[in-house]
Length: 487
Ligand code: MN
Image (cartoon, rainbow, N blue to C red; front, side, top):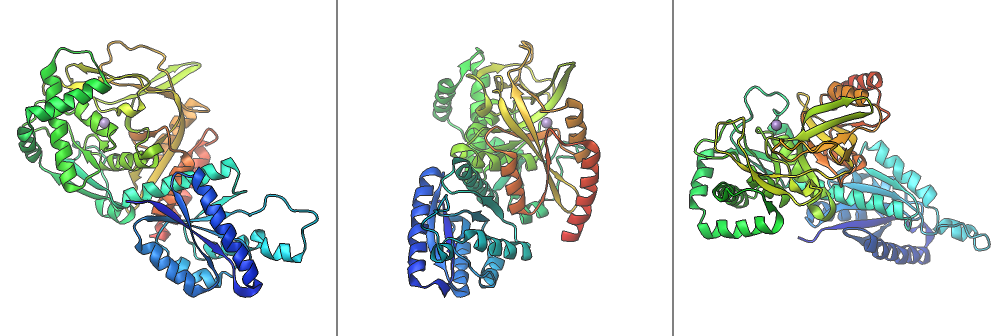
């Protein structure tokens, strides 16, 4: 499906047809030029002069699936009561782009005609008020439209809208329930569907086994060829790898038949299966499917959404679990991995296929991909259910090349540090209630996750290098009241 964003420029009849013609011409020029620098087309739709035009526009924007967001800007003054009914009914994400056609004030040319035409400074404030008055969630981006940083922020917002759209069309396939007795992986599926659009449902592992039995040798041969193309084989146990291929093909077929973009499973429910899916889940993640272990559907769905928000809609976002720390002075790092399931999209080099025993789950030795995670700035995202509502916690981190080889660790691993004080960052994560399961994102930013949370209408907590525990505790307490009132 075509994906695009719609631009509406605010004006009014007061200035006469000549000014309106100029506004329209410039609107088209800006949309065309900006589209060269944005990941999706920005389509000029109209210059708004009346409330009727705006209501018609919003009805169309809400209805058209290819319209993923609406960008507004007021070239001239545009009285906001005219916008009120339309904006109140807008269901697509909204960005108020506070920009100006000209960069500089021209010394000789400026007169009252110039001022009447170029009064975005005036018009955007009127436009901003109605957004605030309506309590309408919106992204405000200010700056000159040809500036690279401004265009980058608009591009990022578009990716957030891709994530919002993906979220509202996401189905999650669960093989089995949550790991027994675990709290943070639980959640209210009705509230999740209302907020995020996620349809989360469970299928029997027995059905998956039936699908596995129907996979042909030819299908397995083809997938093995894909494995060989992408990965180095550091095992002679071909049958273990082929078994993972069988699991992958069966899971993919079931998900595709149901239109699911994410899945969960649990090592506690593998009835009829000989291996916990390792390589199988990893390769599905690399192909863009979201995944959460131990039945964690929230992290599975968030992984799928964040992958869509990344570059080329299959970015470097991955299900991650923190395991252990290195606490030596000056070398304070966290080590993350999982039993098997780390997405190879975040690998620093070419992953190796290895087969090792699994300490948990009493099944045959599963094949898995082993690699080091790449270095670079990233974010951790955790979505938790606070009872009646969701909280998103986002922490800035920096991944590093692991400081140790860890030759006996048979899983993919990622090492990171927090900018600022290690202990404070850890205390803040725990105070906020952040999960051990997270989504690690290299190509989404905290600003993007804040924008996504705003569109979805949930609490957003950003842990930065400057976050202090006592201020955070206070903010969370206040937030709790605010969200209770919002219902
Ligand atoms: Mn886990």
